[in-house]
Image (tube, one colour):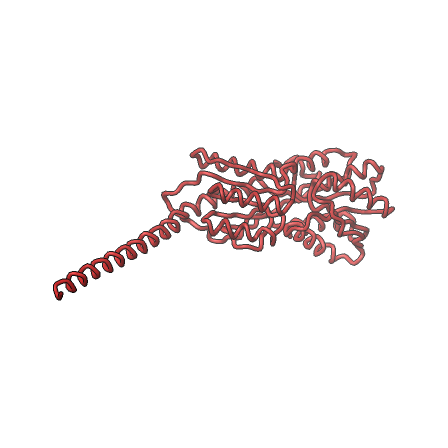
Length: 331
């Protein structure tokens, strides 16, 4: 009986030992897997293979230039990097779905121009938890991203409206064609108001009308404003497309007592400025392709394990007028 008890005890000890050994092996495997996920996100041996670009509206030349900039830099890096650019039509749900799709497709680098800086936070957080590099361009987001690259939009509003103030000699009636509520537009309006505030004889007669950042929106809003106000001295359009629409409204109404200053430096704006019969006079020019190129560069560096010294990068704008238009290289 003693012999039987001894045999049972030995067998029990062997089973317990095997069970503990298996549990320890599982723990090591899980730890190794987690470590592998962390190290492969940013590793010198890892290569950038796919880029997803989520934009506001590819019908807008600005966003076309962003797409082209990403493609140019991807080609320069080499290795057959695939770039997939999508348009949301400034719809938050659409953009959120697009970013979720990029994450699900295991896209290495996600570049976005957010249509809603707060609304995109959940999908950005999800992408980064999945180990994706996320870089915001043009408009800031209320989420942790790997980098934020934008024009100095406050400066854009400042230089555009300083030009207006100088040209109307510090007095007159000014209209702001506002746009889709996003950080970049808000900063431009703020910069404009800062410049105009220095001149007590400049009256800001409209600043809240949303031209939606489109030519049709600019045409619609400006047509209404021309009906409402018999005299306008200058118009600040928060982007060139709405400014081009406003220029068309002026032509249709046969009003030429005012001039328009936009933001972007787009091909449509420079074409409108070349037409002496129009009222589009100047634009604070951005470099959208350059922003996208920088985003791809930084994204590739991060994947290689090299983070930027500062995650916030502001690119200055340049004021283009009819006087210096011939030297402007454009997009």
